[in-house]
Length: 92
Image (cartoon, rainbow, N blue to C red):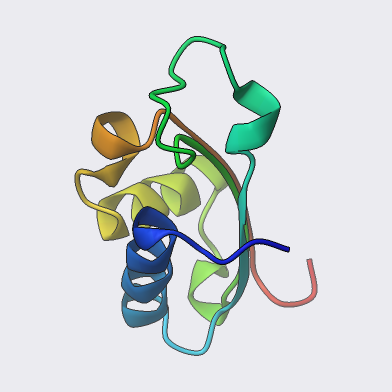
């Protein structure tokens, strides 16, 4: 497993701050997309997030994804080309 780069570290810090107590895994999938559209050569362009947080209870999938994107600010769409999000509440 490689050492997280600066973008991944920043994303992890933002997620931890926005979703206290959440259990999440942020995976850098950029190597799978090398040479594809959106690959900026940084090695930090494509990520997958799996996050479980009690605060997601009662929210639909779109609201959960919006909350994650809001927490990450300008990263998605600016410095991160693609982010796959799987957001659940405990027990789901």
